[in-house]
Length: 152
Length: 411
Ligand SMILES: Cc1ncc(COP(=O)(O)O)c(C=O)c1O
Image (cartoon, rainbow over all chains, first blue to last red; front, side, top):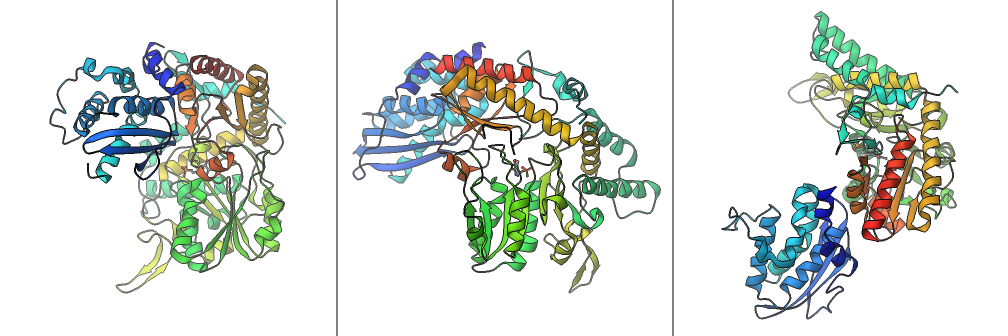
């Protein structure tokens, strides 16, 4: 059952049990975007406040499996206080690690350096469970959609 | 009642000989799709090896044999569900979903208009909701729902009020999430008294309990072969002969006509009117073999076997896990089948199913295509456990071991 332990690493279980940046920011000024994974019924509500090109604050609410919820929690930790460009860079790296790189990602075929991913690397084990990749990427896809909606 | 030996059924099902992650497979997902015995698989191979050609066309020997095999399947399925006139009443479709769509399109769209009422229940599968929602959008029909009680039964306290003025009642004969079997006969009588037709979603019932459409008093029944030990790719729409004869065709093309001119066509009689194009012939042969197999087990015995396992599972889940495992399913063994839905304290159904997989246990996590019911229950997802004639107590023991593991991991 080694790969099961690889999937459910302690960091993931910890973020699942005590999610960071949980809740909803008041709208306005926050922008609110919902994401769904119809496969397992995961739902994510992302509220985000930008200050120029910086993600000043972000919160996530919703419900779902440990992978979708811990990934959302980890994501907030990575992008909060970062520039939009940095957030998009992390998003590209994460999606490459999940083997679902965006088509317009110039480095789509480059090997990824997981050390640069920090805590996000904890989700690496998901790749061995192809059905769960959608759970892991839900928060990031919701963030991508939010940035499009905000023209950011 | 003569009982069968589930170990013998296991021996008949080739898929149960494989292992998953090096373990015996504990297949507890028969409500999603059942595992076929080799007699079904061999009947289909034999058909392809010896008899295959198109049906209702050629005059050569194998064409006649293929047509005979296909029409024989119609009769055997018809007699299995007590259809008075199988030759006129059984339509082969792709699955239960297509059967509902065919009924909604052929009957619903030609008969129902603005304000006409269709009564459904909160425990329906999407296959018996979305086609009616489409008619609501397109034609302005009104949908009413019978609710679900806190004991996971259909709430019939306002049955007569809900049925007043309705044209159709379309309800599940067994819930694919709860296992609940509603009192179909009583609802059918009430529907007819109110001047409405009644259709049932028999997808979960037909392969798991004796079912007789005349005794149930229904007008329409829809089901899929792959949930009754048969192949994928074929389903059944049964409708009373007069009703089916009154319905216009849905899909047009070859096989469903009497005559075609450049500016008009005359449809064939039912059931061929509803079977445009080359039908699922090998699948019909497989379905007939599945029916033979189920008959050899005896449907009373199949139902009793499911209930025995359900009783064992309910008892063990309660004694071993108490409040840590919530069971969304009637707690007694009356008017129910072998399906139960579980939610664990602090463990999402998807995670539970993932852990169970490593124990060789196959259960389904999610909303089970019944989102309105999940909202009513107040859970986003459950892990559903369901039995078949090949299920045994050690499948449930493997489930219990996996639940223990998941609770330890996430707790
Ligand atoms: C109660 C019920 N109705 C309808 C269906 C739809 O069956 P199918 O997917 O074979 O069309 C299912 C199975 O998924 C079911 O459980």
